[in-house]
Image 1 (tube, rainbow, N blue to C red):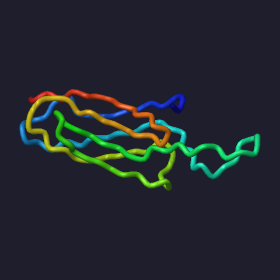
Image 2 (cartoon, one colour):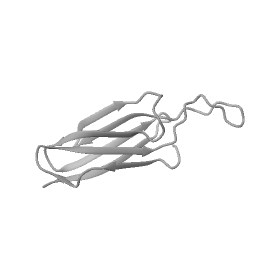
Image 3 (tube, rainbow, N blue to C red):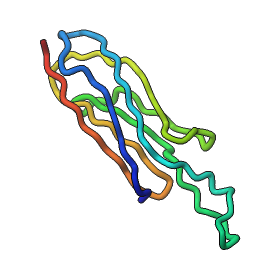
Length: 109
């Protein structure tokens, strides 16, 4: 697991039924391409976020496959339609098998 990985998401506290809200998600993650050599001359293992998903109440909102050319600290902004109160679950998948998650509630106004 990469040290100092910090997911950050911004979700409105509430929305009207059927309202489309803007979601912002960023994860602080130092990417490693797997092509650089360390001070010992060996390749540093590849560690990148390769997939990002967001679900609302267990229903998928977005599922992104991320290519190796992604930059450090990948940022996503997308819209989601809110039909009921519940929780957004955000998940980032790392090449090393680590999974990082964050959950944010949303209420119906």
